[in-house]
Length: 219
Picture 1 (cartoon, rainbow, N blue to C red):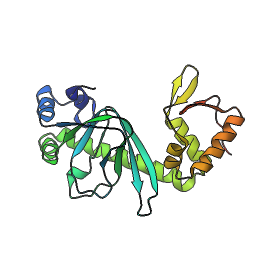
Picture 2: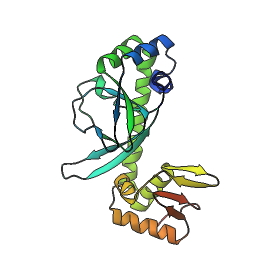
Picture 3: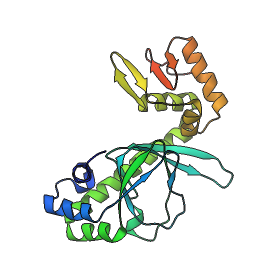
């Protein structure tokens, strides 16, 4: 598990703070562990804490009253979420669920606000952080509104893949995982992946997808 002080130092929001300041925030941070598939924050909640991921991974998702869900982001060790809630009486805008056993540093609204008010550089960074969040969400909304399902699937494959030798291999992704990220049915994703596999563009082993060659621009 990542060291709390080191993790706080690496987070953009707190980067550059002195050791004493980091120690002060760390001393007031509550450490909690949650198993896989635990909902940490629910969309519409009135909670106001800030979360730092010390270990594990989470999905950020939206849902409606009909039970339909779409995953808009994935966050892992060293990243954080919940920056907006401590700034005012704003309900949680999305839900957060662990996708593996995870450990969090939870910073209360009081500690968060004290840090912002006494350290101007942190206040400026929270503005930059929120701007980046808006840009990311704008890209996701643009993708959902303007791209067809195939191109959204391609975007997800590349986004969740890393270089392994000369090829790109995704993290563990099920067809339902991809469907939840692109706003489509699992059956549609299955057809797309099947044709890409038949064409030699991808290979699938377990929950990992290997991109064998550049994916075609259309389907």
